[in-house]
Length: 315
Image (cartoon, rainbow, N blue to C red; front, side, top):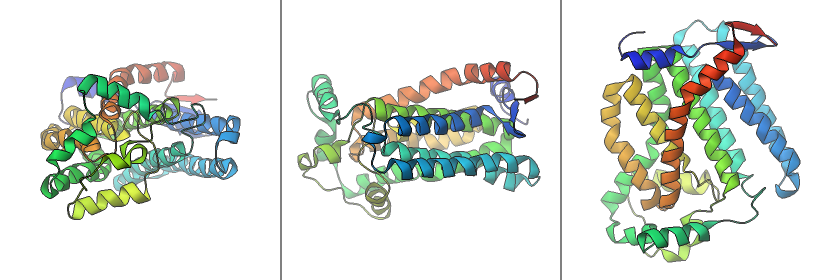
């Protein structure tokens, strides 16, 4: 491994041990992803009465899970570094995206109603106002466009930072990044089900009187809102959680990227509630979720390594 401090090298060195099941070499990241697939499948089966078209959702989950397993079998056969990166990173990030879309359909399986009034009462007690409404006084096209840029560029940073980490610091450093991303995503998705929040624009659209006007990035952000997002997917905010993981992983492995990303990530935090995608509570919970995962990730990987034992274990 080239460059970087001793601590980042020690953390990256934790990764790489595999558990071989039917000749598929599972790493810690795979355990998180496939564990989530199995858990979601169980939840769909148990709470099928509370899910629209549960059979189709289960089939969709199984299909994406099978494709992910296929990527694990394909990985050792790839010797080109670029192809290896694309398959590994693509598999993890695409599965996280699919789990997000599936989790959106599962938000009311346990708690059967949206809990926005609880958040509104909390924020009213803390701030004396509803921050997303109070911020309307600052809405202008240039500021909206910058906030939308910070919100949307996340989609580019997600794989872009993975490429920087992989090609500068190696495969194990990439696994550190992917493991944190996967674990953080899964915790957020389970949060949707534990405490479902519809979101400001869905719960109280009538509260907003100032439209969000901008240009290119505003159009991109609104397209995502209306064509990708569904009601909910709010607490913890995956946007803030994953942005925090990306920012801290940049600090760990690509320090220059950390400094470049700093104004973007800080703006992204504000954008989530300035643009009415989330309440402030959602965004704070997302940041705290990421901090928790980043703190416990090395311990979790050490536990995985202890369970796996040798480099090659057959189950």
